[in-house]
Length: 488
Image 1: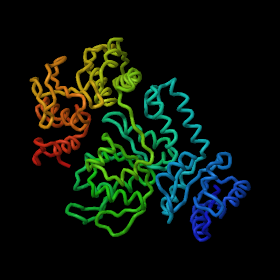
Image 2: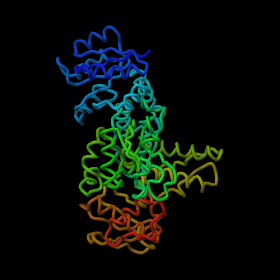
Image 3: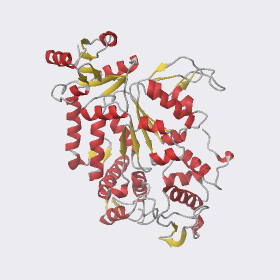
Image 4: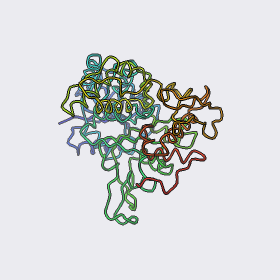
């Protein structure tokens, strides 16, 4: 039987926790001080160590600071004083998770069911890291560049823990792929991974989709519906485009994260949940807070471990590897063998890829469809400078309507029109233009260029149709009409 050690100076709390753990078929020992804990560890190395922070003879972190003492034990903090600083410090010292008092039984059961030897997890991650230079692959991610190796290092540190992760990066950089890799390297790998695009859910249905609803709770609720929190129980819930979640729902999400409890729509019974949250946004978090898109308190709760993904233009050396990976995948689907010409590889590396890895993948797929032989040349690949070539929101080019010279959208009078380049009309924004203004110019100009075909515009920009409608509603003079709104 697996062995647990409970370290808590409160005799009643320790006894209660001991009984709960024993009910899960563990042998359990109890210690009330650091000194007693060290003696118990010397007698029998625990598989899991449930550790209180405030003890009569010191701080529980002192046990974590001695790596040889708990090297082969999974350490879980049990405290009534959890905060961001405590979580980060415990993570750095090797804690796998933390439970906030009073202990949520379902969360405790989840922690006990996911016990894995730290050494086994460490060996698995070290094996992946050692092969990166050879294969270029880390989990579901591809790349050998230094920016990506830093991402791999961050994933390696946080995957085995239970803390929330907040992924930021431009559209198309692979935020969901990072979330999937985090899940697959975690102790939750055998439980569900659910990805939710918050920008694609109708605000009227959001609460029902996230928390579920009871039969008859509203018109059309003909049966009980399990929400994402219940369906992802024991696993990972990936909330993409978190800034598109309605503010009133952000309040309820914060409450769930703090208490581990929620209620279905139409129910008065609280349910317990054991889900790890990974959130993501293509906005800058501070700007999202200042613009009212994200609650500041929710940001603090989600942002325990931030991961910022680099755009593809900042890791150009990875483009040939990624392109070859996509090419072989598409070719295998068709039962063919294909290869790039040297000119095609040069063209791929010269393009700025405003849509990042998603745009690269789509470009490779189109080139495969158009290829008439085993060779994939540059004929159907993007031309360097076709799109938002300067990046970083400082100098940008955007397609304009119908092939005519572009004019700046309202509020961007400083923009200057330029003749078409490579057959694509452009509008250049001056240095100093804010990211919000640059994004607005790009969205509206692309919409005009595609004759207000919103589905095509969203696909070109690499965003969901719902996100495009939300952006248009924010732009003065370009509000989306209710009649045009997509059906949810």
